[in-house]
Length: 308
Image (cartoon, rainbow, N blue to C red; front, side, top):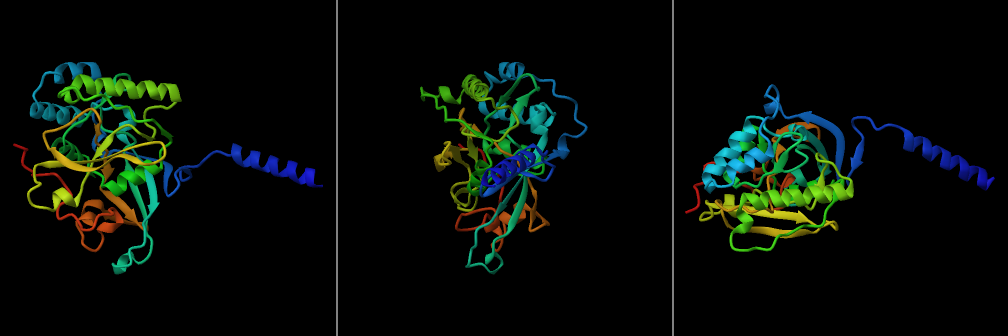
C-alpha cells in the first residue's frame, strides 16, 4: 500500500510539473517574487527598430569627453537604439516590512513594480553593450521613460528575484583606464562570456553584473552633496552586496562596474496605483520603497549641478 501511495504521489507531482505556467505565476524569488507578466515600455512604442550597433556606438563614443558622451548616450537610447528585451518591463512583487513608528506602516503592504530586466543597454538585438553613465544622464533617460532610479532597498529586492548568479568580475584599476569606453566593452564581453558558460540569456534577471546608481537621502536631501552620485550593489551569489552605499564620486565619474536600472514610476500598493517618486518624497510613505532613516525631499538627480 505504501509503495502504491508513493507511486501515486510521484505521478501527481509529475502532472503538476508538466502543467504550463500562466501569466500570473510566480517563477522566481524568495522574499520578492518575479512574475511572468511583461509590459511594453510605453516610450518605445512606435519608435523605429534599433539601428545603431554597439560597435558603431563605441567607435563614436571612445574619444568623446565625458559630458559630450553623456549627451550621446541619452540621445542614442531615446531614439530607440536598445535591444528588444530592454523594451519590456517585468513585474516584481514584494511585501514590505512592518515599521511600527508610522501608523500607515504598522502592517506589511504588497508592492507591485515594473522593472527593466537588465542595466541600460545600447544597440541592436545582435550587437549591444551595457552602457555605464553618470546620474545626470541616467535621470534624463528615467524622466523620459517615466521611471525612477532605485533605492538601495529596491536594488536588494531586485537581486532577490535573480534567475541566475554570476561571480563579480572586477578589473584592476590602472590610472583612469577603468573609466574608458574600451573597458566598458571589455566588461560587457566578460559578462557575456559568463552568460554563455552558465546558459543564461540576455533579458533574464541575473545578479552580479554591476553596481547600481541609486537614490539616497545622503545626497539628495543633505546640503553640500549636490554634485555627487551614489552607487550600491554588485551582489555576490550568496546575496551580499560587494559595494556598500558609496557617495564619494562626483557626478562626472563613471567606470565599467556602474549600471543604471529603470523602475516604472507607476507602482501598486495593495492593488492601488501610486507614483513611486511621490512615495519616496512623502515623510509618511517613503518606507514603502526605502529603508533609509528619512524621506527624499527630491527623489531625482534632476537639476543637480555638474561636479567641478
